[in-house]
Amino acid sequence: MLAKTPPMGWNSWNTFGENINEKVVLETADAMVKTGLKDAGYEYVVIDDCWSKRERDENGRIAADPVKFPHGMKFVADYVHEKGLKFGMYSCAGTKTCAQYPGSFDHEYLDAKTFAEFGVDFLKYDFCFKPEHAKGQLLYHRMGMALKASGREILFSACNWGCDSVETWIRTAGAQMYRSTGDIADNFKSMSDIAVSQLGKLAYSGVGCFNDMDMLVCGMHNQGNVAAGGMSDSEYLFHFALWCVCQSPLMIGCDVRNMSAATLSTLTNKELIRINQDEEARPIYPVSGKPVDSLLIGFKHLADNEYILAAFNFTDTAISPWNGYVNLFDIGMPVSGELGLRLRDVMTGEDVGVVKEYLALPLQARDFRIYRGTAVEAN
Ligand code: GLA
Image (cartoon, rainbow, N blue to C red):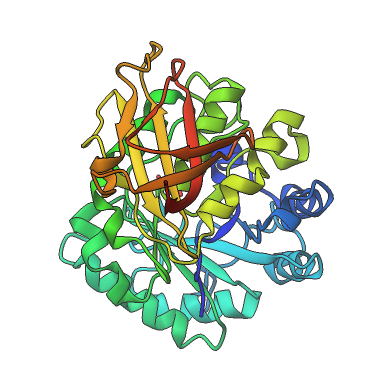
């Protein structure tokens, strides 16, 4: 079974856009091994839009651009596989991709076969240029079935940006992940708006099919295709932690060939990845209601009777203990105090001891805390 836990990998779009080519992909695969990203769990190397010729060939097949990919796609797939990684590609449910290369509309079965012949393990499937008369849901169903008929196991990554209440039907189309929002830009507002917009919708996300809040912009620092101001290293850590507690797929968007130590340390944070890969995949419960430009306090059940209690301050001002605290009654603990939570701060490793009644959560601007632990008898 694919996607028992949220898929992890790298995607070319955020940094490279249309400047994607064989050299970049091969060097990225090398870097994923060398830097330890592969060992941290990142598996898929995915080429996004702009990889093909502008027209289909004489047999109606999509073909790689020979200038960008001089040895063809099978060569790239073989190289990625030799590194112990998996290979992903991109197409679109409409007649053209978003960057106006050939889309798979009405060619779904042929294209799925072509991807299988290339050695593809993952297909991102976009939503531009959908003919008016065609039903979006049907197009995702069709590609879902085409991939199954292709003769190869291919993870289906749907990307209709949350249209048509995608979360309510996408599982029926066989997808393993589904983009739930418009495109991320490299700044704090875009990132936090995306996360906040999904907090009420995470109950649809779970084992076998995960809500994809878009590729990460961690470490991009205002370089590349989605540059929009950039963020600081601590804001990128906030972004990564948020994607982890929401159990979004973790698709790296920066240039992994040239990462800073801070970026690598964020992307390989063991405790955060462990939360992201929790096998029960239960949604986070926003204790404080739905935060808009404010504070999110969330509680989440993990496997093995563990929990996390997380707090994210989206605002530009510090939150004092008077305003930032959680009453344990509000997460479901008994009022009598016979149970407490034995907690550990996952970022610092600090043992917080057994917390009863309430926990203070003082936070700096754009700061977060995540505590992990179990419920224990408090007396
Ligand atoms: C859409 C998608 C992006 C990216 C581009 C490529 O905007 O949402 O993630 O794939 O198309 O053109």
